[in-house]
Length: 391
Image 1 (cartoon, helix red, strand yellow):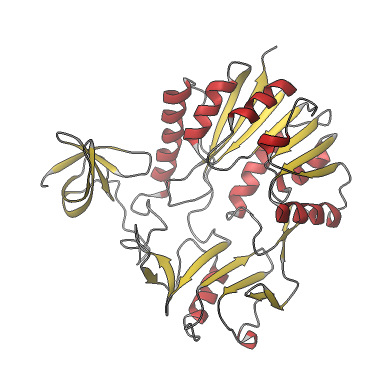
Image 2 (tube, helix red, strand yellow):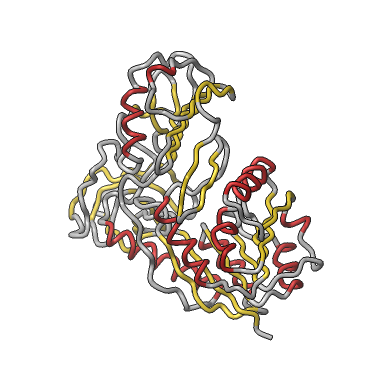
């Protein structure tokens, strides 16, 4: 299709063109005129890719990543970081307004654009890389623009070893340590002296089997399968926002607590914290984190939040940091029954957030919604929301 004008961006950062139906176009910006090859054709919409730019936007920037046209990891590298932030802030505003009728989204908190990821998962099939867009084909890489520089050094080295039997490689780093996890393979650990912990097929070949992150005088254990935010700076920004909303009069219920990072981070400022988490491995790490930080006013409970939570729990403040699908109806109902004065909602998806706020706003005032950039160069955006009970 020729000479399509891009009139808007969707919430995934794709350009939108209008003909007899809507066409979503990758790597296209507002006011650009493009020739498009249709890749998916549905009854109500089509998807396409640009085959020629007739007119380019002045906001377009050249991507610094040599894999950007093929790799499925990033999707906003053709937009300056300043414009990325505007896009994400407006995205949250539009979604929250449309689906929950609220108009209280504040200014987005920026992070860093490059070298922020402390974890990468590399797929292997005789070569190392990431999956191609909408494919399981592997693009061989030797450097990732958004990965920590120590990770990139390891990628270069891994490209030169025997990869025949290896299926997957995970690299994680903290401010001081490096972990290498190999699936289905062999490795000569002597070639990786800079790595603190090496695990191959669940066997610890070097190190403790975990690495430690230190943030604001707190230590956090990161095991091979532990969830830990991939952007250290973005995580600190979010946790400081949560910290701002609590005080020393509060009993806090920390739902979907993972390895206890938020609860431990705020423990010094509140009465006590109870964290609930379904993942047994995460709870084990949370208990280790409690011990190594010598924090006595926090406890953890293993269980599914939607099942174990009931009105027997008492809390002045409930913190929720759910997965992308948000809160289920039973959890929302039980939170409302507990009647906390405050709810602090940490969200990784504005659509499910808006859905949940539409229900919660019947019992709670939505005081602040603050977007945070956690995943620069992608369409993802996090938010922290403060809710206050009405009665």
